[in-house]
Length: 577
Image (tube, rainbow, N blue to C red; front, side, top):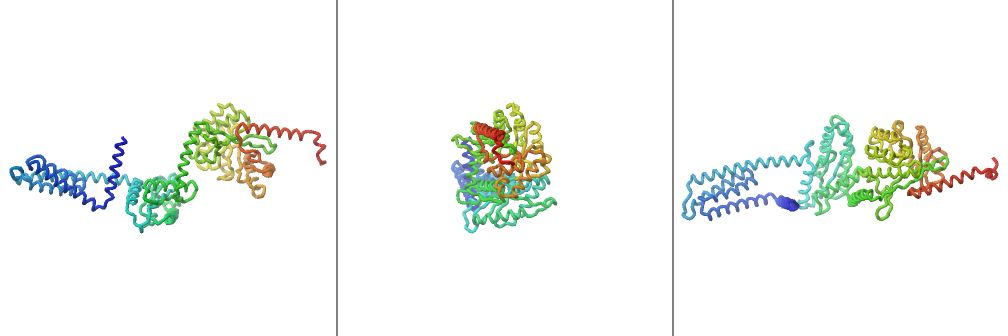
């Protein structure tokens, strides 16, 4: 199978090289081949004794070949030449006997009949092939050129001799970022009309714009001739500006959000596949960075490769038990006692290095690996609760919240560990609710139905709405560290935190402040009647054994302090009131 594939690739490469020659050279070569075959046929007929024998039918070979190359006209013309050449050939070479007129006329008619039939057949096959090729190169819904046409055109442009005045090939991949919203609101006809409207607008960028191709439902690839990267970036700015001007689609005024990525021809090593891949890499980088446009840089490709390798290592790490949970305690501010902790995932790789979640979790959250990773986290947290005997919170992503199987698995893990469901708390960021509030609310109701506590993480940094807070079945809020940082020097920040705490209490929710790092922050939060706090002031996240040891030590300190204050002798040491 490998040998056949190799032969096919060699043939395609040879065909591409042949197509690269100028048309006049190709035609000249074909005519020469036909002339040589006709001449060779005459020699064979003469050498084998004349037209009396069967060898005159060798002259049909160039007739059929002419039908392949030049269709009906070529086949008939070659058949006529072959018939006339055979008319001049003696019937028997040895005796010099000439052919009768009827003999060569019948042969000529037979040549013309076969040539005409073959030419007509090849003409029809050519039409079918061209129609099939056109369909393969065309987007069916918009009739715009598609990715197949893009690759063919790119290959042709890259193989052309360089012309200094024409510039290099540049690609700009444009995506309608809110196409899903348009599809949901107006349907497929609107998306098709939108793509055609954008295509019409971009056509105004000619002559620098060489071609416009629809490469996916929401994406157009623009092929430019440009001088350098700066010129390509100017073109990209024009594209974004043109695309984001108001459009009317099916009678509805629209303003769409575009993002774009570009790549530029760098040298002889460029291929259509590499330029398209680079433009797509740049587009993904622009999307991740929430920018309208990004030009390809080699570092982007290296990062993508690193991400791919990282994801593969995460899967292996789960199988080899390289992940663990560290726990950061939460303190009840009213009395300083430990009331729970947050379980935070860590990755101790094969070399013993400890990786923080920020190095791998953002990428994991965009893949299906988030399900087994979260399952591991919940399982470890449930096991730890049996030793800690206080509430442990873990984080859920948007994908987790919409994963029916994982929600069922949470109940099973709680039951398997034999713990009270209320000792497990799920923390979910505000942004998770903005994707699909109804589905998210139903998922929270299922968790609450299990008896699990649910709180909103990083409260105040997302899209907080009192309306959705009123309806969501949550039990707590966690004020983001951004509000706590520098609070002691900023009275406005203190007032803002006070408002967030009051909102939580007004809704009957337990409020936790994260990122507490100073005694002054601790004191302010206690004065504001915040319920709980966590942060480096108390301790960093610790492995399970160390957290339990820290907890015992903290409990002893608290007991000693309470005993000291309860001692009657202390009253004599205090100043009079």
